Amino acid sequence: MIGLLSRTILMGTPLLYGSLSEVYAERSGVMNTAIEGIFLMGAWAGFVAAYQTGGNLVIGLLAAMGAGVLTAVLYGWITIYLKQQQIVTGVAINILALGICSFFQRVIFGVPLTPLIVEPLQPIAIPILSNVPVIGSILFNQNILTYLLFVLVPVASFVLYKTSLGLSIRSIGENPEAGDVAGLRVDRLRFLTILFAGVMCGIGGAFYSIGYLGMFTTTIIGGRGWIAFAICFLGNWKPYGVLIGTLIFGLAEALAISMQSSGQSIFPNELFIALPYILTIVLTVARRSFNVPAELGIPYRKEG
Image 1 (cartoon, helix red, strand yellow):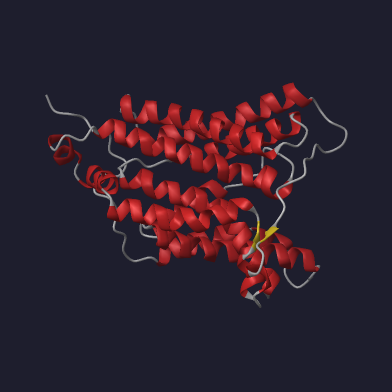
Image 2: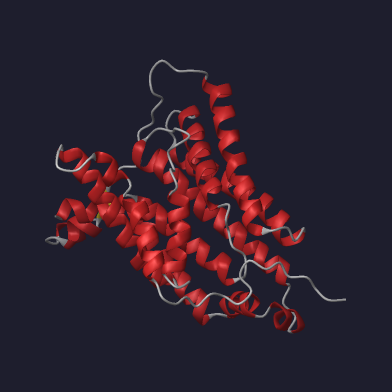
């Protein structure tokens, strides 16, 4: 059970990076439907940079953030400044990201005879805290990206609800006209939230390639960007809400991995692989009400 809960935290880490950034983007009125592509670009760039530098994971993470930001810039420019439809643009960028990663992976590495691997991030046991019974093994024997979230979640909640920046972000998602009249630069502020999403989702994608598996395939994300997107909805666009949602989905994925590795023969492995995605559908259908930002997905066009 301790191992299962520890893996829950581990598998929830990249989802929380994605869903937390989605909260900010959607609170500002932008539906970041390019999240799957940003995850994939982060995973690919992080792995390539780490592999080409002899396993330097710091450079890999920086490259992942850079790739995430570049993808987010493209999405933000098209949807925020060119005022194009956000869902269609996001789907197109997701497909483009898959093509880019597939093409350049073949160009750079050809067709390797053996899998290309790097040493992934290792757990760091925090002195004293990691020795606390039960809790220590679950919370304080994780990698650095997980520990970073211990700070990011409360900071994200504080900024969103207790600062003028957070008020500005929330106001332009509810009434951008009023924000514009009050002197807020709506498009610029929305673009900044998308850049933040690019950084966070780039890290989330890199988690799979260099933080957990130590390898890259074009199917490595496998729809998890969309799960992070759904968690934002299920968490009601609140940082602590998405934290709870992430733990639920992290548990589903950890359980799926545990059941596959146990060699059980009662249920087919495909059922456990599909478990997180089934859970996404079930929870979305079961949710009765959403406090959707009033202008979510609607480009702001300044009158006059």
